Length: 161
Image 1 (tube, rainbow, N blue to C red):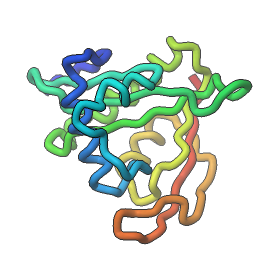
Image 2 (image 1 turned 60 degrees about the vertical axis):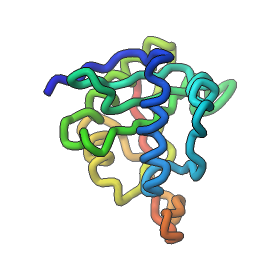
Image 3 (image 1 turned 45 degrees about the vertical axis):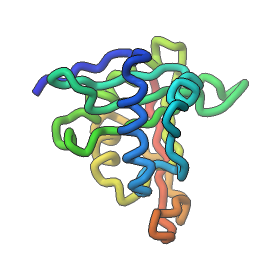
Image 4 (image 1 turned 30 degrees about the vertical axis):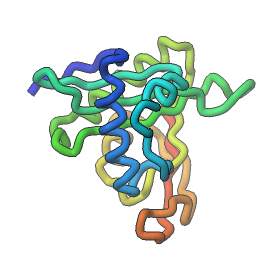
């Protein structure tokens, strides 16, 4: 299956929110606890520097957003979040999204991509990031509160653009 990554459009917002909310509700990867409310998609996604979707066979199978990781003198560092529809896992959608996000972040003038909180048990994401040249900075013990209430380690990564 071919996966095409493109900039998101207003007509994509509802499906982007659906996929995002699945990851939030799973409580295993995103730090957010609140889902995007119906009708709040434009405001939520409108606050990012760039949003994109992955399409396969005419349907959206994943999405990402890019934003500054910090402000001022650290504003050249980007951060991104990725969400893949569970039905599309194993199709290399994540790889396509991350590769495109690195390109777009560079185009937007960022110099570094940093991930602040990759859950240590998220082996698929960790393998993907490391295979694409992300450097592991370190581990923050108990930095993520899992949906079951247990605290899990998080790993910080960066990639020069």
